[in-house]
Image (cartoon, rainbow, N blue to C red):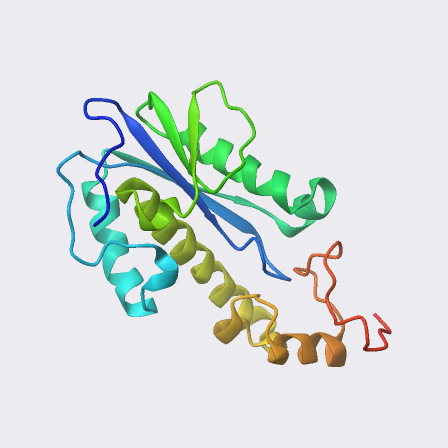
Length: 198
């Protein structure tokens, strides 16, 4: 069962990102402040939910959250500062956009760049803390929407199915068509054993 808050009475913002392991597209982060009594039987780590469940939960989270924000860091910025720093930047940007200032940030994972608001890192926090689970759902669904949008622009990469993750189908499309304007050039786009003319 997910916890509502680590400490009763504190304004806690859960933070999570989506898209760190992708070959293309942005990394997307969300920060969410939920009411202490927020509850929904489906709420969980976005990776443990079906696409239909995530889509079902998104408007509920948006409607009932005390504050929420989603921010994107694009592929070219990822190449410039690396994916870890881009993930931290996206979370900072999301936190800074919240309409309520939290007293503590609850970060999914074991590392974070210091923010002026104190933080606590929680490994697998998206399956332990409600606000982090909610943030994971918003980050994932907003990013998926973006990948579906650019799939219409560049359908050869099958982003509607792989969402930019390094599937066999996606890597084969890169081999055939070369990297797109949305691919992260700092990532290993093809396995090392494949001759790359890109």
